[in-house]
Amino acid sequence: MGYKYFSGHEYFVTLKTYGGQLFFDTEEKKQIVKDRIFEYSKKLQIKIVVYAILSNHYHLILRSNFWKNATKFLQMVNGGSSYLLNKTENSEGRGVWDIRWTRPINTEAGMYYVSGYILGNPIKHGLVRGLEELYDYRFCNYQEAVQECGLEYVDDMIHQTIAMNLDLETEEQYLIRERGLAK
Image 1 (cartoon, rainbow, N blue to C red):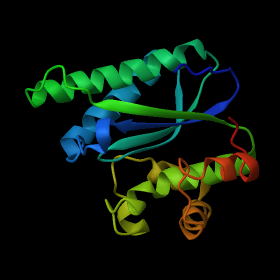
Image 2 (image 1 turned 180 degrees about the vertical axis):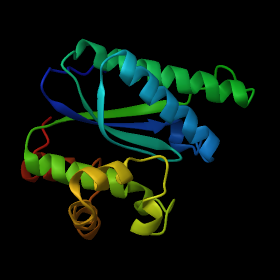
Image 3 (image 1 turned 90 degrees about the vertical axis):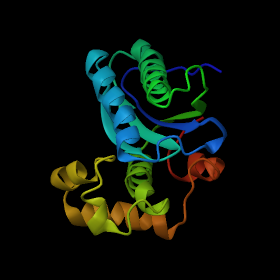
Image 4 (image 1 turned 180 degrees about the horizontal axis):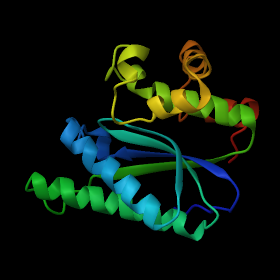
């Protein structure tokens, strides 16, 4: 299924692994995804606003003035990370990435809640035990967000999404209506 991207918008993107398998269960494997994200974002002029890489999925908020590059960016990240992971595990040809979920973010409130959701995802999935550990988690940009927006603001974003027990993929209709995400 194709997605249409438009210049001047931020997009919330989630990529899940095939069957939810924990293909990226070590720091070395997560680093493969992170390297591809930042290599191709630079090459294709895609701004990564917020990101988190977990064991079986990753989340991004993307922004670009060249949206023809968005689909190419995701293909390069997913194809490159699949190839490298499979090569290191001697599993060439294995499917790695499965489901892509993409939605534009249309409001400031939408950006706030989606950013909090993404930044808090390592806590939600038990990769870190709290905000103190999140500061040192290398596979999301919590530390950058704190430096840019302040600790209290960023922690509030995360606490609100955790308190609301949001799961942006399963509560899609609520978020479209209440939080500024569009179909």
